[in-house]
Amino acid sequence: MSAGRIVLLVFGIIFLVASVFLLVGGSGLSWANATLTDSEGFYTIDTTRLESDSYAITSEPADIDWDSDQDMGWCCDPGDFLTVKVEAENRAASKGVFIGIGSEDDVADYLDDVEYDEITEWTSDSRGIDVDYRRHRGNSEPGDPTEQNFWEASAYGTGTQTLRWEPESGSWVLVIMNQDGSNDVDVDAAVGARVPWVFWLGIGLLIAGAVALPAGIVMVYFAARRPR
Image (cartoon, rainbow, N blue to C red; front, side):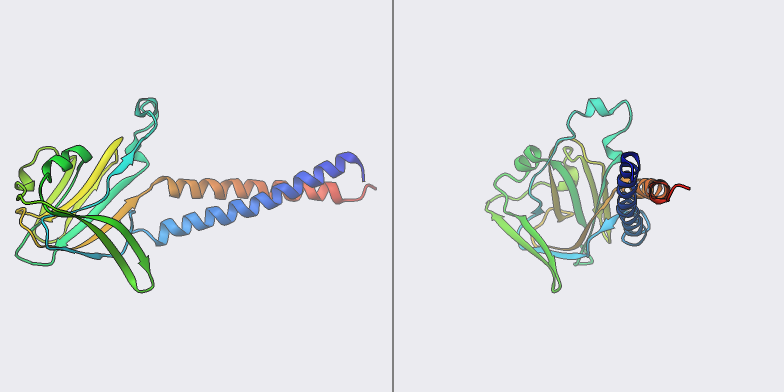
């Protein structure tokens, strides 16, 4: 076999192997997008009970750095890549629930000297979802959360409330409270994320795999066939 045929055979095999990975990856992403999302396209975890005798339940600060938002402005918005959804309902039907996202500094000022619980770990296994908290002590009562103007996004009321937020650069904290700011928070909550690019990435991988497969077959065929 000539050197040219050997090179062609090697590239043909590479294309065939790559096509398998591309087709499997694209199929997996397309399947996940079709079967694991809700009607709005959100990947959502199971509803979890969050309970505390304090005034609020918060997440740990989430540091987001889009690595220069200004440079992305010419083609897209960071919110095009990810949308967060938080749903919550107060287990006490007569009470409303408040959901808010604010900057770490603003939330710290609002809950200064207020007793609240911070979620430190959220794990899921065959037995269900387990939530661990860290208690922040305080002696004051918080102001009405619905009257604060620092929230980046918020939702409140009776029944199931839904907050949708397109993340921005900064350090952010999720806060869940009773609508009137009273203590004894007891809610059912779920968190989800919509990632539109997963669908298009899956389609792109399928197309690339569909192109690489016949190309690899052709290369192997011409490299392996015997000359007349």
